[in-house]
Every structure is written in C-alpha cells, then in structure tokens.
Length: 107
Ligand SMILES: [Zn+2]
Image 1 (tube, helix red, strand yellow):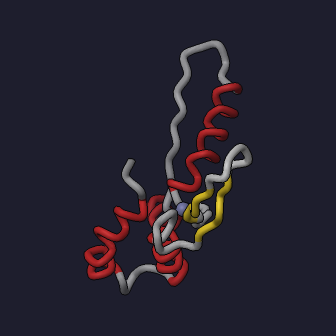
Image 2 (image 1 turned 135 degrees about the vertical axis):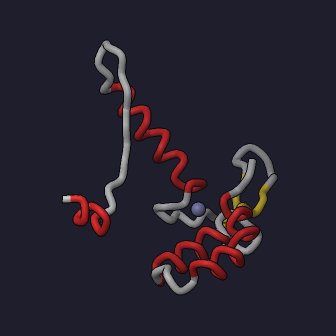
C-alpha cells in the first residue's frame, strides 16, 4: 500500500517550488500534518494484546479531514449510506466543483 505521506515526502519539494507563494497557511499545515501520518515521525501509542503479553507501538494517524489515508473509513461509510439510497433504476452519481471566482465570469 502506498501511503499518502510517502507521496508528500516525494513531491513536496517540487510542489512548494512551484506553488509556495500561492498556497494558504492552512494548506501548509495540512501538508505538514499528513506528511507524518502513520510514519515513524508521528506520535505513537502502545497497543497490547489482551490474550498474550505481546505489545507494540503503533504510529498515530493524523486525523486531518483531507487525509485520504485517515478518511478512507469515513469515505467507505459515506459510500455505503449512498448505496442504500439507490432507486431501482439505472443510476449515475456525478460530483463536480464550481469555482466561484471563475463562475462569476460565466454569468
Ligand atoms: Zn492521516
């Protein structure tokens, strides 16, 4: 499995070289948070087996709302809720984003 944090670590320098002057402080904070998500650099918690003496330290997830690694479970739950709403017919779900800065020029 490819972690999103490894993608950030690989491409962050190039990304910031291109967009550093255009991203918001919140975006920088998100990158910093997701960069260490579930890595050896994140805080760790002790997980112990209740049946034996085995215990291990597990890295924390970042929990950021935009982290695809952390939100996969939430996304799966959302998808399952949407599937329950399907009507008995051919069905398509289309999602799109309208950028208001551009949209006002269109109308
Ligand atoms: Zn995360």
